[in-house]
Image 1 (cartoon, rainbow, N blue to C red):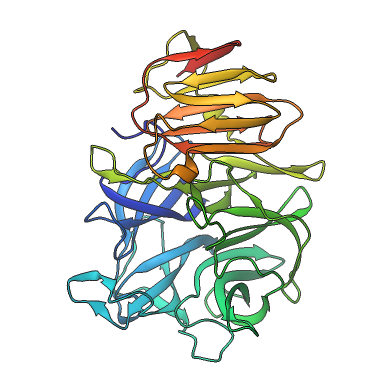
Image 2 (image 1 turned 90 degrees about the horizontal axis):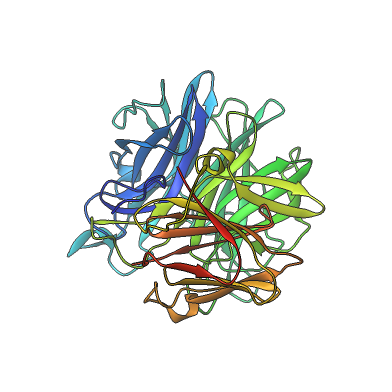
Amino acid sequence: MHPKYHLTAPKHWINDPNGFIYYRGNYHLFYQYFPYENRWGTMHWGHAISKDLINWQDLGIALYPSKNFDANGCFSGSSIKIDGKMYIYYTSVRYTKTNPENIHTTLTGDEFLSSQSMIISEDGFKFDNLNSKKMIIPVFKEGQIGHPTHTRDPKVWYHDNKYYMVLASKYLDETNNYNGQLLFYNSTDGKDWKYVNNYRGLKYGDMWECPDIFNVDGQDILIMSPERTNKDGYPSHGRITTINFDHENCKLEITGPLNYLDYGLDLYAPQSTIDEDGRRIYVAWMRMPAPDDENWIGLITYPRIITYRNNHIYSDIHPNVDNLFVSETNDFNNEIACKITTKLDIGDYLNIGGYQISFDGKLNIDRSLVYNYDAGLKQLSSPKLDKCELKIFYDQHIIEIYINNGEYVLSNIVYNLSNDINSNTNFTIYKK
């Protein structure tokens, strides 16, 4: 069964959200897509649109491999409106050694080359994959500033009459170990790009995927997904921190801790945009260890608004979603999307169909009964809290918990919830 309001592919594999943009009256959300099986393979861009960030219309495949430079995948990227057109930037991948038993993978691992490419759509609906693609940043050579294989995920934005791009990459340090780095480019027209600077000021993971830089409430923010930082559960996670970013020379300074964007530890590869009311919002991929019975795997979170106040980054549910669920009900049904509100004191608990929530100064979850997979991901906690006011959103296979109006978020993939709900405190269920 598909979720009612969370975006999934019609069938098969989905991962990173791409090209997220409000453009000509529609939200366009693209996603990494392997349309043939419930596993990762040659990347295409799936495409969906929405008027309200809740109800999504699938439009099929937007980008597919069509050139020698992207013969083995159109990897993650972003989009921006320039001169009324939609400019899409993506990482183009070509294998150097293909697995003869599965042409959708390399022979043993890192046998591929990555360049950065673009395609321009006149209207955001038609994409001429045969005639409109252009490589804009070629594959790096050994010894150059970027890695020839692991440079990817172009995120483009506009600031003071220039366009800026950040790329994820990696480099070998003085101890011959790989570390993540960010590469910065600028452009006057969005087509011709000039390298400006890099950032190597932090050793944390060996690759920083899906970087995203923006300003909220006067504070510069960096989101990225460092790889191979955790020993238990998934090794890589979406992170967020405050920064100072000087556009003149693309100099970056990290000024805060690199916190989890979501403490449920299933979330990865977030991407932000500006909504129709000028608010900074983001969505992200929720990793699923097993497919649904209807032959799909992976989904995209509800949209979240990022704000900055009292020296803290908040990540709260978008009001379009919050205002969708207004009718009180006494019943929890695992086939119906809903919102549950409650306030927990020390010792309080709420059990949603086998998904157990409790509060002991931290918000704790135990999904052992509804997640029969990695033991390191079954019991999780938030940071310490002064209070615990919750908005909980359930849809098929996902629970998103917004703590204290977005002070923290904890979201989890779940399977086979029951229709039972119980607690030792008051709660209210809302349906559409």
